[in-house]
Image (cartoon, rainbow, N blue to C red; front, top):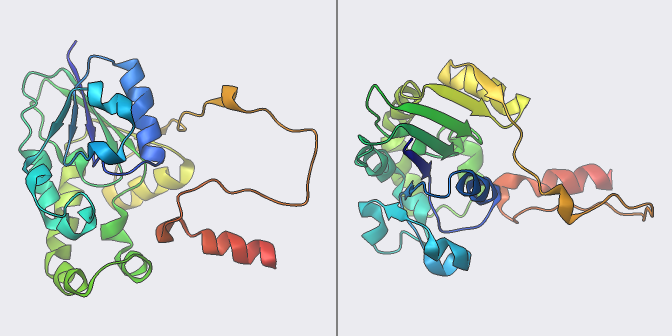
Length: 221
């Protein structure tokens, strides 16, 4: 069985990339299709993987400012040729669920969240470092991108959600049912401590949409 893994972008390390690593362990021979790949920003072992990028990978500045190129992602993922693949697994928080597959190919989407840029736009733009030009241009494309995102969800054969919250979002936005499979956790790396100190720890990327400010305010109260 020929398997392909589809991932939104490879220019940063986060939870999506942890999931990608496990998928690659499960299907070591599977190529990875993605919009862009920045080797310098990713773990060295990625360089041994079969990573296939879109035309966007050749665009200037895209690897540092990938959010500014939102209107191009639908075309980037639709141009991949997956006609010889039996199983496609998309690891999605952006646009990669929009790949086009033939009728005989099964497409399973592991959905980290419906595309937050599109469905929580105001909150995202207010908190992220979105430049003035992008702020001005985004409304011109937003309706098109939302329509595309919704129609692209119909191309997926089976949705898998990472939590009940994401499952509810999938049902509301995409009108699709899903199975919950929680993200993999390497429990061998740690053990519960019998000593309890007077603090709490959050492990996260320090980026606005993670909303660590809410956690800080909650604990301060």
